[in-house]
Image 1 (tube, rainbow, N blue to C red):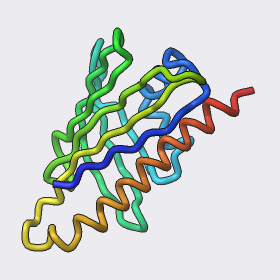
Image 2: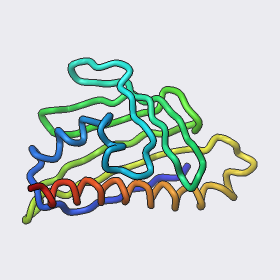
Image 3: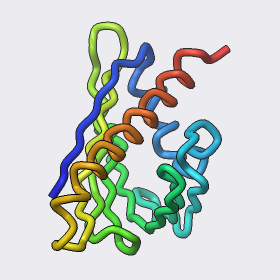
Length: 146
């Protein structure tokens, strides 16, 4: 099962970044690969969200549950329905000297064993690129505030 972990330092405090991460429905405004994110259900410490992503012309759809640990400014997510057999991970915010390191982990499984060996390396690269694009978009949004 492919696992991807990307991180990027951002010149902003965790307390400034965390609320942006929690507003997933706004991600498509500044993340080019996302077509839409719809909040289906919002509770005090969780949401259920429907995602549509365009990866190199391929539409990938999934629904996930997002769990928010506000005290630790940590988000975990797990697909509950969608195109992949498994899709889960977390957002981790760690204070560093000049701001915050944002780390995004993605653990996924394509779900077709016979072609997984062929597709997993390609998908892993696409997920890594997409994840890094997400972090870069957040970094640019945080560091280019007026």
